Image 1 (cartoon, helix red, strand yellow):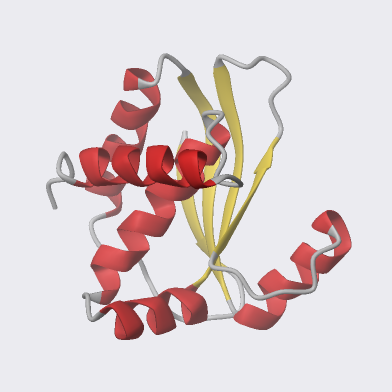
Image 2 (spheres, helix red, strand yellow):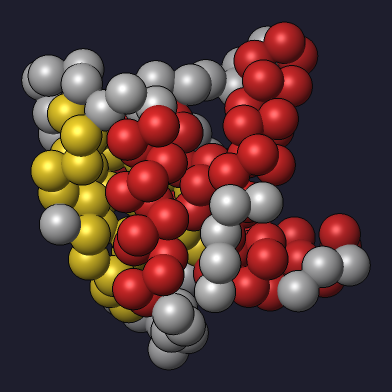
Length: 139
């Protein structure tokens, strides 16, 4: 099951059914099963607090993921997304907010599927995956 939540902001994701179906399809294509996934929108300050508390990073970021599954084939976790970071990214990249939000969502999903982005090679791989899955989204 995929749920969408807002914590301390008012932004709402449009076309939740289409986004949820797209996420599930992505997870299936990656050879995994979606059990429970929460897509949570919040503010910069809320995400920074989580980043400091759980990851020991004192930086702003657009998304952090928490996996709760012990089975590597099962996706169960949270995508915590700062809508303020996504808005700034969209403005700087000159793309629509919804487009950037979808990229950040799929980026987080790919992290839960086991992809990383610490090295240049990993960043190129995850970006190519993002682009491929974004082309499959129909909203």
